[in-house]
Length: 145
Ligand code: FES
Image (cartoon, rainbow, N blue to C red; front, side, top):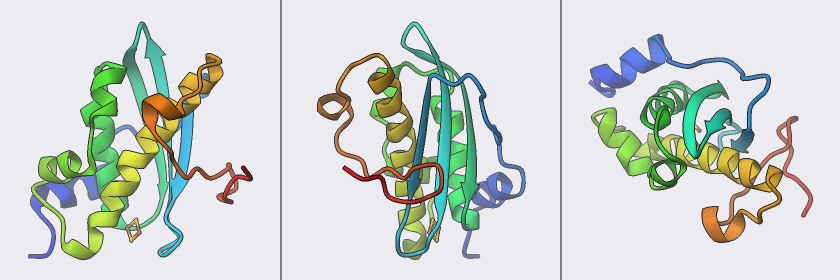
C-alpha cells in the first residue's frame, strides 16, 4: 500500500476546504516542477489562528497534506504554527512515499506564506520572523521582487 489510511482519508474527505473572504492572511505557494498550487487563508485573533481554510490545485498528497496542516494549526498560536514542519505534517499522516515529500513542504510553506501576509498587513516585515518564502500571486505566477 503506497498511501496510509490517513492520507487516503484526508484526500477523500479534505478538512477545511474553501476560502475565508475576510481572512487576516492569505498565502499562495507552488512547486515549479509539478505545477501544483496551494492557497491558505487564516483568520487570526489575539495571536491565535481561529479559522483556516485552503484550496489546493494539485495532487492527492498535496490535498491530504494541506488538509492535515489546517487541522494542526487550527486553534494554535502563531508561534506554534510557525513551528509546524512538513515532517510533522507527514508524521500526522503516518508518512508519505519519498516522491511525495515535496507535497508536504508545500503545505508548510503555504501556512508560512499566509503568516507572512498577516505580518505584512500589520506593517511588520515578516522575513525575520517567518523566513524567506517563494510566493505566487493569485494567478499562480511568481511575484516580482
Ligand atoms: Fe507536487 Fe504533490 S506532486 S505537490
